[in-house]
Length: 213
Image 1 (cartoon, helix red, strand yellow):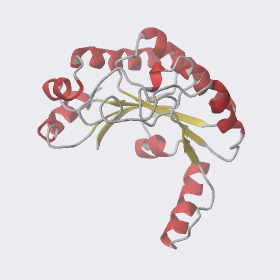
Image 2 (cartoon, helix red, strand yellow):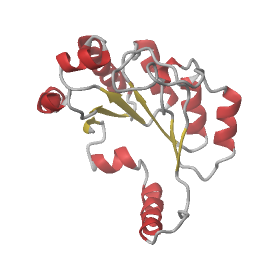
Image 3 (tube, helix red, strand yellow):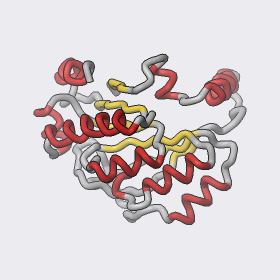
Image 4 (cartoon, helix red, strand yellow):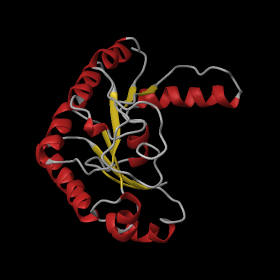
């Protein structure tokens, strides 16, 4: 995966995007030592991934969500989400994505806000197509820490792989960054592309398009 990151906090960008806080980094270092020692356990669980939903508005060639996935489609209930957060006080990071597009969940803003109020670092990955001004304001005001946006290569490659207008998603991302800055929010923004045969020729174009933004 190739990534380009934009943040209002320019210091130590890789650290910010991966750990968020020094205490998480400290625990992760200890966890890595446990792994090096081939321990069947880690020192402390720091992160939990929650599949808010496994539905999506796109039909990307490389994703099974709307192609080969056979399990039932649906949204996580608020009760189950709340139970996961409440029963895992030691968890420091909550990643609100697995399969599916998390912005399709009507309570995504409430989930971010609830996890943040419990002291969690919150992150999600989106295809960016649903980053309207209303949704963007909602997740920014909820206090989302990290937003990762999947954009595969250049316009031609992207539209071939994802079947959506590149110019529309590009505009959504730039509008989100502008809104974030105008609100004084601290949300970290990261755009990424998956590397596979169809996208390899667009790697340089991807960097050139985003590095000044």
